[in-house]
Image 1 (cartoon, helix red, strand yellow):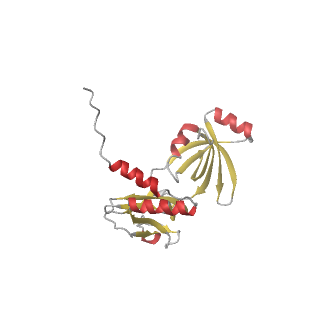
Image 2 (cartoon, rainbow, N blue to C red; image 1 turned 135 degrees about the vertical axis):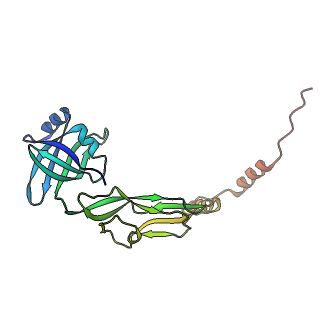
Image 3 (cartoon, one colour; image 1 turned 30 degrees about the horizontal axis):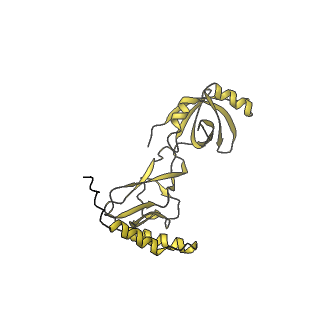
Length: 222
């Protein structure tokens, strides 16, 4: 859980693309705060501080909107596709002690058994948690896990006070045997067969024979 982040916000009265560009040129970011049945509040946020704040998923901000403090959860961050600069932020009002639904990242920890491959099938879990105690993620241990090990959402250890919203039967982490060279060769042959590609076995045999043949002796220059 991270500390609350305090930002000063200014009420925004200009709208449209031109106004948004002017706000960003002033190193600020346009945002909207909504929720709890209140009318949306259009504000501007300090650019650099906001950029740092939203690096954390599900950041909760304490906004000072011209003398009035409100708590808001970062719901969505819109970025310019190429430069990835923040263009707009959506914030949802929350209250102390309120439960909110958030997407939490799944992390894997530990070394599985040799010759295995670990796949995170579900990258996030939806949890209901206290708005001011949102975890940065949940961790699944695969220490010593053998092929065939599967971890379902309902088996993941959750932070205290958190409730799982994701279907508990959802497969989150899967441990499988690593593919061998023979498996890959068989897959290639099957794919070529489906595409109607026929291998020239005589050429393959000739290449194999050439690889196994001893090198020719060097010419006698004397």
